[in-house]
Structure formats: structure tokens, C-alpha cells
Length: 115
Image (cartoon, rainbow, N blue to C red; front, side, top):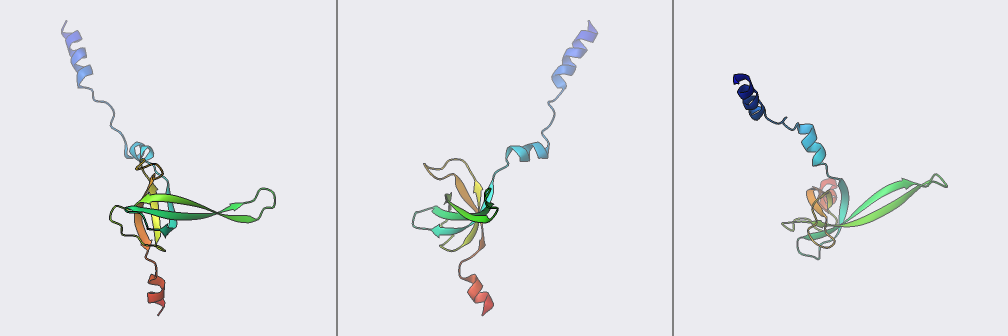
């Protein structure tokens, strides 16, 4: 009788295996892109143009392709021409599924550094 009681208490005290950091990171994996802010006319929203090169299957030459994403910018920090990193997020509006992660380069900063 004592053995059965001990077995039951052992089962209750066993904890579920802890999630490793790798498992959590895989679950939270989000796509990131780097692009240029094309429009800042909306409040807390920026349109970011992401360009990429794709190799043509027929001719083998590289073709430039571009996509525009609407990204959330909480503090309206980015301006037209800024190079930004965007990250995938939950749907914030009808078209907005991205958020600005960080501003990599401010527009016009190259002119100041060269002079």
C-alpha cells in the first residue's frame, strides 16, 4: 500500500521538461528585410521598398525585383530615404504586417560624412 502512494506522489512531482532556448527561438522566428523608406505620409506607418536580385531560369541573367511593405513606426522616427530593417509582426491593420526594427542609415548622412 505504501508503494502505490509513493508512485502517485512521484508522478505529481515530476515537472514537464523545460523549453530550451532553441525551441523558443524557432517558434519566434520572424522574417527580416532591409529596405528604403519610400513614403512617410501616413501616421505611424511607413512604406518600405525591398529590392532583391533573382536569377532568370531561361536566360541565366539577374533581374531586379522589388516589393513594397507597409511597416509600423510607433514614434514616426523614420523619414523618406532612410535605410531600415523591418521585421514580421502580427496583423496591425488591413495591409500592415511588418514593423520597423531599427534605422540603419539616416537619409542624407552620406553627404555629411563625405564632406
